[in-house]
Amino acid sequence: MARILSGIKPTGRLTLGNYIGALKNFKNFQDSGETFIFVADLHALTLPIEPEFLRTNTRDIVAFYLAAGLDPEKCTLFRQSQVSQHAELAIILQNYLYMGELNRMTQFKEKSQNMNQNAIGLGLFAYPVLMAADILLYDANIVPVGEDQTQHVEITRDLVKRFNNRYGEVLIMPEARINKVGKRIMSLSNPTVKMSKSDPKGDVFLLDDLKVIRKKIMSAVTDSGSEIIYDDENKPGISNLLTIYAALKEISISDAEALFIDARYGDFKKAVADLVVAELGAFQARYYAIINSSQVEDVLNAGEKKARQIAQGVLHRVQKAVGLL
Ligand code: ATP
Ligand code: LTN
Image (tube, rainbow, N blue to C red; front, side):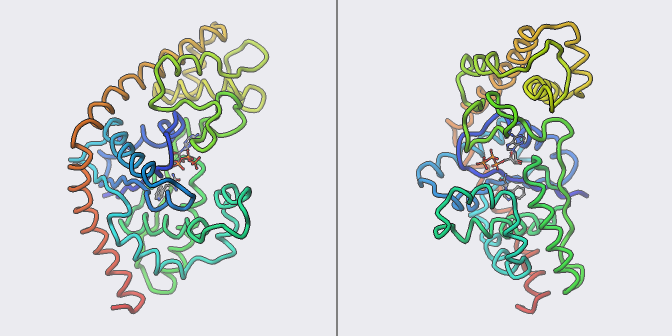
């Protein structure tokens, strides 16, 4: 049976990119295998963050998971920090990833480039070590993520090869699972850069007022010409909107193109706005019902208990393999 694992960092307001690239997919996995979805709260500490902001975001992400259709009966939900085996495994695994390869990670380079080079935290540098521990601790073989996280799954695979070469078949080889449509949603105001919660220009936030969401989509940058076709080099704006439409409808890009073959840009944008507003409207209603109840705490209590059990078994196996037990 497949083991599926993924997580999101509670570092800020989630965007439509997070929703399409990660959140929305998670529920499709919970029926195909044993699914573990967590809040990467330890990873949130790799860049400065206010304690109260971290606390609120963490609770929000759990509510988002539930609002996106994750069912705690089918899938284990937990906070990374509350399953101490993540930290314990990371301490062991840090010896099998090398500084040269960590230094080449795109995310590290992007996040550290504008920082004072003398004040870059070790945690930011070692981010992939903890992420490898997250994945390997549950023997996960499938890791659903957006495109920007594939490099981290690749380095985890390198670690598994290296470790198993040395100690035998101890760790399970994971594989990234990327959406066909919507692996990289772009900013609405600059469709050549990723929609990102740390660069909020042109973002649709999941909890934005629905009127604001509609306005942001109606004023999305489009391209010259009038055809609604996918061409991410020459028509990045239209291609991004087509991707958003197709991903939310769960249809292919060519099926989406066919629907708008005779449409004008304005009509097309209105159709995209209607769809996003309907989807996020329903999502928000579920979120507000959950966040105002004790459901988040109840789900975490049960999830963390189960996660600790599984994680302890794997940690034990690794400790034995390397000679700690
Ligand atoms: P930051 O910008 O702070 O690094 P982020 O918005 O990239 O954050 P993460 O917590 O790193 O958010 O991502 C959560 C998940 O959402 C990951 O699987 C990531 O690949 C996915 N994701 C993030 N942005 C997008 C996007 N624009 N399109 C598709 N998937 C995305
Ligand atoms: N790095 C990821 C969050 C994350 C994750 C993981 C995803 C931490 N550990 C393990 C999948 C599997 C991100 O930024 N979204």
